[in-house]
Image (cartoon, rainbow, N blue to C red; front, side, top):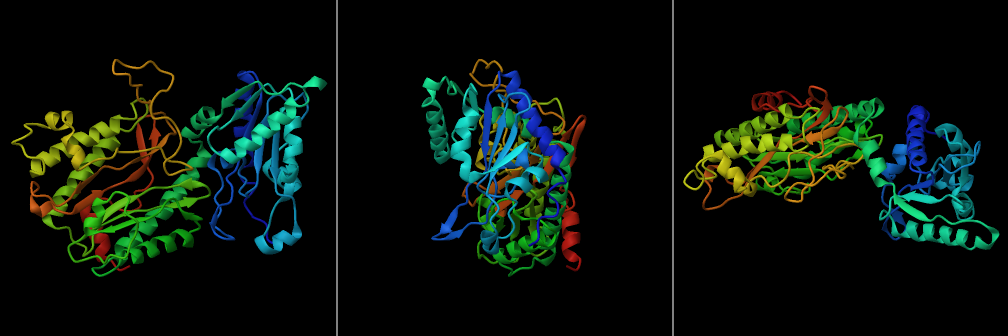
Length: 461
């Protein structure tokens, strides 16, 4: 039976991450951290959804099987195991049905743990590990079922009080520590994200090239999914948005069965997940390969807004800076086109102050990106002083942070909007790595300039 070929590639990376957590726990007084993976989820009756591990667990282990728990014991005596995995026992009969499983011994060796046990004995082993540990570090709120199991282990330790064993007396949330670690990507992560971005860009290019009036949204989605898998991605990073015509004004429109009409714009927000890391690309292009004058006007406004946001994305600026830059360009464009009337707002500052632009641009310009498409990490400095309005300051961008840059305009039909702009939805999204003096875009393998999009669509698929 074939075992995975790439399991040992990042052993040192995962081991170093676990050591960082252990060092942080020791600095905080010790204790035991517990990080379970995600459970399998039934689709119906006895059929499960395709399994996807928990991102926090995978970040620290690289292990992809279900029924697994990582324990990091910063209270361990000298020489005792500190990095411990619980996983499924080796079972040849089960492998006939489900395929290769490592089992504890092979998993310990392949992924660099100090010790590993069958998950079947976790209810026996965990009370032993928690005895006299002092503090339990766990992502509270992640799983009610697991928290009930954790409470049972603590109760089992309390039952040994007469024997002089002390149960944990503090429960601390592990989330902030792990979020801060995941927020700044290491070179191993960035390399994977660049490959994911490349695959997703190839898929978007393919969708542009095969698009013609009459094609249905689900056909374009099929092209995307095919290219993702053809190039080695395990899955889409999120449900693909493929929206023709007015459907593009629905922000999270799922790929449906609408046919693209001559004169429609197509908005595709879709990307792959590769080795646990997401990419995230949006492109908007004409079904017939030619932007109409009104479409081109709005498209160029959104593209200029994206460029302003990109220029504002660099180390040392607040997370909000790219959004503010994009909003100013969009608001001016809405005034210039008459979509927002100058009879009501005399200048762009008034549009922004009254938030009049939010009728046509109602989301933010970016989000963290990483193992999750909307990745973990606070957007504001949680430990800083609040301002006079009670708000925390925005987080400062640092090198290695990864985020999207995705302004848009969504103009529904309305009596007070010039009809040439009705039912036009446009979003342009790229993935950026924050660098010291700017940012690196990793998704420009698919064009964004209108002339380049039209040229690509004229080329043979």
